[in-house]
Image 1 (spheres, rainbow, N blue to C red):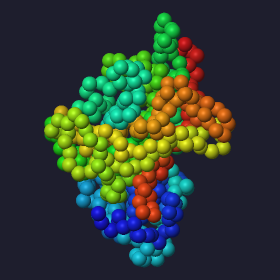
Image 2: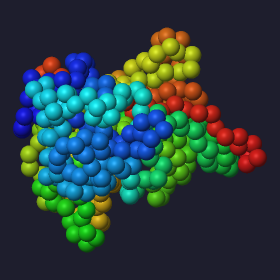
Image 3: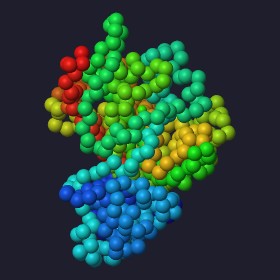
Length: 427
Ligand code: CA
């Protein structure tokens, strides 16, 4: 722990106690002021601090040019010591006792932007995207729908199951998602059909970005995970369940997942999350030696999903859960990924898999919340029902760690469903 974790620390920028972005957080993102090029910034309250501007005037631990960039890759590739140094120096510049930036009206006006007036970007150039499946409750729920007698596969408690997703269709919060077309085979149909998915779903997940390379052929022990993991974002792994059911055997998810994955724009650093790591669940049977780990790797991170139809005036909360109950943790996921000598790159995204708790209102997907359509969700404001997402629905995810009088939050991860392209010519 260091001074940035002091619950009493405050900034000369006024920050509401309910804000996701107090001085204890300082998440990194890439933003574009209107009509200007993207650059790296830090969120503080309702503002973004432009690091490419302040680094021209102050030594903030890294040169200005690494922040005048459309991604975090250059900055983050400088290594963990630099991440920490920059965060500490930005903390100092924003601290209530520090006048150097506060009293420089010219620089202040050039470096502070209202968050509502900038456009956020996908924070990294993502080389590879991997999605795990690490919630025991989610795996059990989904498994029990298809294999009532044997919901968890025999490998599940021995390795963090995952698959390679599509990095190039990772999009930033606020980007609409078009209902995908795909091949499905209804149970009563003799042959498959092609058309818009009828079972569009979200998956509430948390992802981490790696900030260090590992050459091909070398491993990453769990003890080195903190050197590799830069920070975390919220992830919505949009899924077309009917497409998935028909296509997934024997090689796993493909077009049912690859049409879009939404991430929240602010990367919350492992350093900011340090006070909120807790003991993880007991893993029984014991894991193989390369998956053993020391220290606390479960994260006490509150998560929510909110839904709004076009007829509603505001979002309704449909899921409330916590990330701390995940069976497999980030250190194990990374060690497993690299255990065969796969290279790790700066800007890889590793998502957790759907986060589901043990009560029906804590499930992280529509598939589970409405239990395959058997218990449709009721939308209170309009009386509408949902088993899967309809066109125009907005899915909003939030996440935060609760400190004493402050929260380290993730901001929003939102996407609205657009109607499908006309598929009539393909029917
Ligand atoms: Ca997933």
